[in-house]
Amino acid sequence: MYLKTLGENAVNAKYTIGLLSEEKRNDVLLKVADALLKNTDYLIAQNKIDYDKGVSENMKASLLDRLMIDEKRIEGIAEGIRQVASLEDPLNRVLSEKTLANGMHITKISVPLGVIGIIYESRPNVTALTFKSGNVCILKGGSDAINSNMAITKVIRDVLKEENVDENAVQLIEKTDRETAGEFMKLNEYVDVLIPRGSAGLIKAVVNNSTIPVIETGSGNCHVYVDKDADIDMAVNIIFNAKTQRIGVCNACESLVVHKDIREALLPKLAAKLKEKDVEIRGDKDTKEIIDCVDATEEDFGKEYLDYIISVKTVSSVEEAIAHINKYNTSHSDCIVTNDKEAADKFLKGVDSACVYHNVSTRFTDGFEFGLGAEIGISTQKLHARGPMGLNELTSYKYTITGNGQVRG
Image (cartoon, rainbow, N blue to C red; front, side):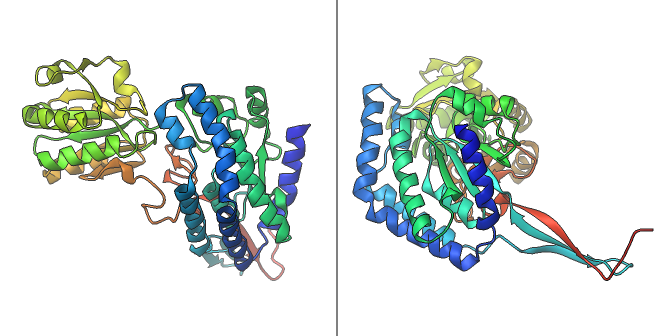
């Protein structure tokens, strides 16, 4: 009954939120940004409860980093919301139009998806994107961040009430047990699309059990392939950034593929650089001939570590690199480092991922970095959306047809 009530409230809200003017939606978002800054002390205090609990339970450093909220991050969230408000309105855009021979005029127009369910730790920039695109959001966070999620949601809903906007445009499922999550996945009577954000296990569970259409934001076993014609210094810098700039994110490099002809020049220099961050290297037989490292297993080549660990596979050609990556990647983000245009073209065309890079760190797979303002997730599937999902990916479309009495014969 609890979830059904949330669902009914969401459906009622979606028929009002989508009709709000762009000016009103932007004004509400700006007020939310101000309210988050005003409530910084409150949000940090609630987050500290979650963070201290995580520390006491020996949570991984990468997960603690994701969990932690401080003044700087709240400022970043507020700025992100303001940027979302400044983006071009994604609604009511004429995508195409034509007049048929019988005089009927058909127009294809962008509209909100409706009610979006998100299973992951709540972040206000997600709700900002949802609200800007005229959608309603139901969030299901984990127990690790429940106090933080409740505090953030309260601040947002208070602003909605003050602005005479249906506060049910943003709702948080406060029950964090798995049974409730399972029930939420069956709420297709009320929820139009479900977006899981989290571990590979969570995403798999949602994909396998949901009766709601799912946009899969996959885990990130991202690769960097260093071709035989790569610039060594460039390769080292790209790998170091992609691996260590932030380890707990889905666009971090987890797997390295190296052409055998460049391993002697690359691997010692790379190992020395990675040692600065105490990165553990797990290499295949050919890698171990060059540097001292841990033995890599078959499991290592397909693993998203979210830690200071990287696997290394040696190959004899760009074709072999492509085959290896397509076998073990998660269709997220993969990179080739090379000065050979022909090899780069083969890689860009051959690797089946949402984002494929040439001489660029995989850490750029991000809605903000792509100029989308922000993102709700990075889709690794091919239907509806692929790659960073910004405002346009949170819309669908409908056809409006006008005429002067036409009937079908």
